[in-house]
Image: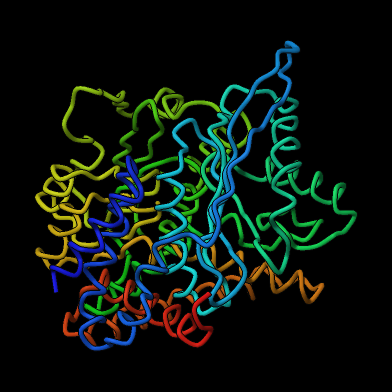
Length: 452
């Protein structure tokens, strides 16, 4: 069956030159799906795999805007509409200088399976721009968002494609884009998720990805009769996902000891308690400062990023749990070794594809509790789906209602992944379980809808 995987990968590389992240995402899924193809030759006959790898639509456009000095700036905007077999395209918008076609295709591909796992009727998509909101004034961000939406609005809609936030796109950016969409379309609809509470947003949406990855870790621990209480946790990142991961770890009796940004990381052995977390939230969400200020305020060690190192020292501390919550490929081969050496036996991925393939293999071989991103961080998009439901119903659910629904969705994702892993002969391998459970639902819908 590896010849089938090799054949698919050769086609992917030939058709999509210079897109390493996309190859990585496809390869990981293909290795799991070789188990399915053996049992279901009809998927192969109908070329489901080849069709699922090819986006239904790729939109690329220029985004001109004027900065505070009156200079014209030009960025590039994208939307990858990957698969709509089970519902409208759904997935975030990322504003970051590293954004390119390959990264967005990997994210959109992952999103298809992640959204399928949530049990909600959502297809997969992803988009964004190489615009960097860091260091820009609110006025510049508004000008950019308005120009970006002036093209994107033609391609999205509440029953077509519903974008959300991602790296570089928070409440401020969603607000500016929603305002422009509403002006251009002259309609108030739930076309974006992550909206403000007074204009169609959902309670728990900002918290959802972080809370969800912790709930997933709790489900994995429960299979061994354990809880998060008293466990030391390494958390990377300091944005939305990392912040609420720490909040939920604290609520469930664990202790988070690290946070990072692109400049470096802090290590607080005493634990990042509620008061310290409030400082981080103000620092990052309001003042948009650097995590180094935490080290100065609380007198704890700060390690700046060293580009010459072959590993990330954040992952080289004694702990039981790790929650990578920053970005793709932040855990390399050596980092995976360091995590295992230091006693980490729970890894729940809050970021998208944060572990390189060799690292994933090490976690699986070691038999630790490993929650891959498409399962463990699906809480964010699940709650986006709940926001869509509330918009359609013109209703608002309480904080407790949304949190309970999120908790139940994470339980069902874990259960579906465990059951699929067992059904296809790899018990405990949640990478296979999540990929297979997510794929089968989409594949069956594609089979039923014909060659489209």
